[in-house]
Amino acid sequence: METELWLLWATLAVSLLYYLSSLSRGADASPLPPGPKPLPLVGNLLDLRGHLHHALARLARAHGPVMRLRLGLTTAVVVSSRDAAREAFAKHDRRLAARAVPDAARALGFSERSMIWLPSSDPRWKALRGIVAAHVFSPRSLAAVRAVRERKVRDLVGYLRGRVGREVDLGQAVYGGVLNLMSSAFFSIDVVDVGAESAQGLRKLVEAIVESIAKPNVSDLVPFLRRFDLQGWRRRTARHYEEIFRVLDGIIDRRLAEASSSRDTHGDFLDALLELLSTGKVARDNLTTILFDVFAAGSDTIAITVEWAMAELLRNPSTMARVRVELDGAFGSKATVEEPDAASLPYLQAVVKEAMRLHPVAPILLPHLAVEDGVEVGGYTVPKGSTVIFNVWAIMRDPRVWERPDEFLPERFLDKAAGVEFRGKDFEFIPFGAGRRLCPGLPMAERVVPHIVASLLHGFDWRLPEGVFAEQLDLSEKFTTVNVLAVPLRAVPVVRT
Image (cartoon, rainbow, N blue to C red):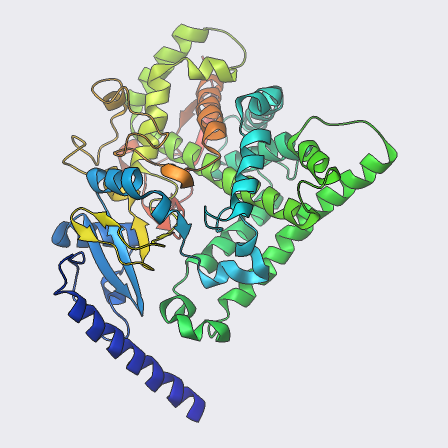
């Protein structure tokens, strides 16, 4: 009891000192960003009810596109406009390219060997990023396994063909198909049966890790309490990591055993990693982390984006009809769609972009960290050591940039915004982030997402379940650190006539 009282009083004292020091800094020549008045100890946490990206957007409307919040004893600066994002990335990318690492991500030392969490100044980050860029997502590497990806998309279509006329959980089916697409491209095996519970089990394991990292954690809000792990989130995350690492380690160990008895190769990403291992360019304990970084994160991003795109098309029948006209004009009675086919369809590409704009998988980019003084955004100083949050959901719905921003209008990407791409250079549209922390899996996503959507539309007509009308389709969100449909999308594939 005495220990708990001591911790409480120590927390209150440090919070009060921090609060008073923040008030004194307000008189400095370089102003800090404005923001809602924080309460002692909890800061602005009570202002963040509901989905985080919605709450931050609401506060930004009152306090401006560069806004300061207190989250417990930590300071956060929130960027919510295109111009502020451009200034942050174009002028200060190096100073903001570190990560504010949630305590749960430190489980099993994961944050110290993962390119997701390592600072960009760390030589290990540069080495890992270089490996992934050269051996996974380079044009040559992607071309080498294109046939594998196309075969897995055909498998997904085949699974749905066996369920024609029946209601299916489309998100679950797509997720299973994408898991196998990624696992086949990376290590030449299917990890699940499409649509089966095994796919859901693996997905739930990844979601449990994401949830543990995203949950409010006193270790992040009051850093000097971190070593106690009072809520146990680091311990829970460690157990989840152990489970998924056991699966990935089993895949690696089996391949190593094969390599010792045979000279046959698979031509996949794991072959390239094992070659680097044999020459000492990568350590064995890094292999599992690399596979997790590119496999788990990439599968979620692709599958969720496809589900959002299909949901919007089912809710907007006129848009669905226009995509079909484009598909039929390009392919006619062609049996299957190939990746280059999908890349050649401007309206389909516009549909995918618009789905990403309205429903970014990561509406709040993983938090950045200001590691140096001298960062100024929007006329305000970003304090060294503060967490920097980019609300891309708000940026991509900014009414000052986007006309009718809350409506699904793919045509906008055929008109004045036709040149807007998602490579982090057009700061009004950054679903994959920008700068040094641009998502490395972007080249895979831009090939696979349109290909899957085109294949689903070319292979079937789609209707909603009996009694569900397009205008009633529930597109409400469920948000942790990724943005998914709160109600899974159910639809009926129908043979095309």
